[in-house]
Image (tube, rainbow, N blue to C red; front, top):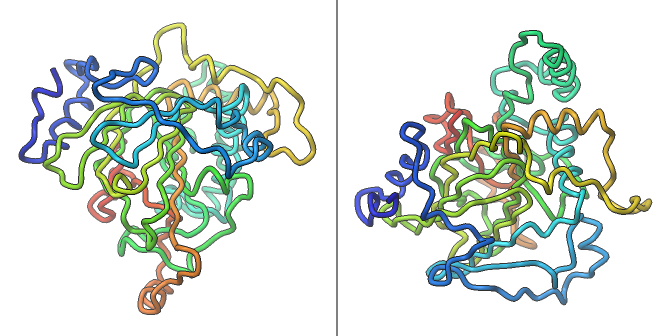
Length: 354
């Protein structure tokens, strides 16, 4: 059993991380928590307060009424909440399209900017679509820019070298994403997210939110030390995690993406279309068949994660010394903290295996 191999002690987190990342022999997933079949000695049901949020606002973001959400907590992890796919039918497609087509556009920042020119990273979606169409004709083609994409940041951009944010590195944040995301991470089926703590933000009082779309991932939630053995859980398409209070600064990681079973390339919830036509002021809109073909192709082997982090508290400003120190830096990242391409691991400290 995976859990028995990695007990408390010398970096128990990394030991379990390596077990679940292993390919041969494949790991044993029997002790990974599945919230559709929660284990009562580890999981309990949470009641969410829906009073501050109107059903209209929730619906505009593509979510079901809060009263219908299935939320859970974990014993031993106060402040951690897991919400099983609260998205309305069809709305996940919209968010996937935004993540792949809209948000990688300039002036937002992505991992490709670190080793490619702005001309080369212009119109990532269009250039990738053209290659994908040629691949569909049976031609051998190089990897698309979408396949090389690992992260995109919006809002305040993070400096990987100094591991800080700066008021000088900021791009407008999309209105429709205000309630959903600050940073986008892209995980392919051969990818993982290294062990880390999201602590670079100046405000830790607000929760960290994580939204998952695409293939299922194994998520590890640990303690305040690497010696604390983590708890493993499945994160499926549409699931949301909230890390607040004591859980806000816990170690966490994604060691692996679970490959889709033959004949079921995408989770059924991703094949759904909107049940009603969008109104003029709705954020969620139906997508064209051409756009969905690209998203479908990408999601067969990938997972998209949207993470929301609050950088500054209300009325808070960046320290003047930090602002002057970063004003000339050009390596950017957004209002969160994420993962880097494996080639940049040693420089960033935030890992992302590819």
